[in-house]
Length: 533
Image (cartoon, rainbow, N blue to C red; front, side, top):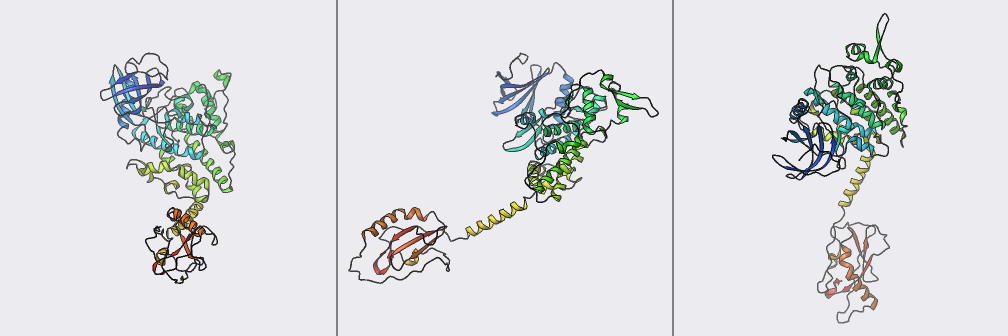
């Protein structure tokens, strides 16, 4: 099978053989200069998988580095650390094939399909927590993803596991070294140290995650620059005048003189060049002006005042977290372990200040996917994080007090229903079998009931005299006998009563008035004065 041919992304291709299985290629999802990402069906397992095809003849050192990083990551549980599962790797026809598990939509497609093209804070929170768990593992291993964006964060199964995500595509990953790499991150998510030409560190991924979080909330990119100079302009504008580039970072940068001008004074300082000094005539506009205005961007309006105040405080915490993730100084940028302690992630401050807020209750409920992941993690996972932070509010989340009160009332009502008398046994309609009056009474019936009548004895009369039953009574008896069996199966509690003036059995059901008979059964006096149906 020749993968060098040009084909449409929706075109179905032929099968591909591997040492252990065969793959039916359904479509090509992505296609680059040195790699292709295809959607295939593993015929051996009958599962749909991703099959990444790398051209080993070009960029061989980079691909060997990717395989080495995947080898390190396969030692850890991909479900606990939110990494795409790598099933197998094989070589054929001078190409490298990597099989990954099948995932759902990317965050980019998920947000694009929404009418608002954005997400709420209680939906962004679990995504940030899961990606921070991945970045904490990469930081410990000394690995930098360098390509963290909404296209490489994928939902696992949003229908069954809402907002459960995994990080994808480690093709551009690098080991954290003291060397500078040019153009290793997408321009909208590129950190300032990469633009200035500083060494590669794990703080690059935290900057990219901050850009992703802002994009999910705003519905548009935070820094929509067309070149690196415009990106630096948007960074200064977005973070505000109080956040300036550190002079030490500018002194160490290899590309500082390209974008900054040193001022001649007693204390020489760097300043960003004007568009005319840089040689730029047009500038890309920015929808979002400053992180300080994030509370005013979308008005907060809830049904209760407590929920409104809680969401407003939550936005303030989100803005503070964004400033920490987008700090211009890479040495002062927030780390994944510090991110777990932030009030926006823990929700401790909101839960303590607004204990009766439904908004806080919904936020804690959204973090259920992270709680399940924490409980199943190993010693190197989330349990090690708990040693350095207070336990988050959502980790020991309880339902809203009003919901608990309603649930308690419903449970009490259910217990009362369970203590009701059991269902009476079926009454036989056969005239040959005689039943006494005590057999007609419900078992375990309460002795005292205000609406239950008394049973009066029936006068004995001569057995030689045939009983006088009117024609209507006979029809009523036959009609009642046909429905007697099906009727006694429906209600749980029934009352029986004999009227002394008329030989009738009145059956009453739960929920009916005392004066409304449901069924009226005619009675006959059998041998020995016993009453039978």
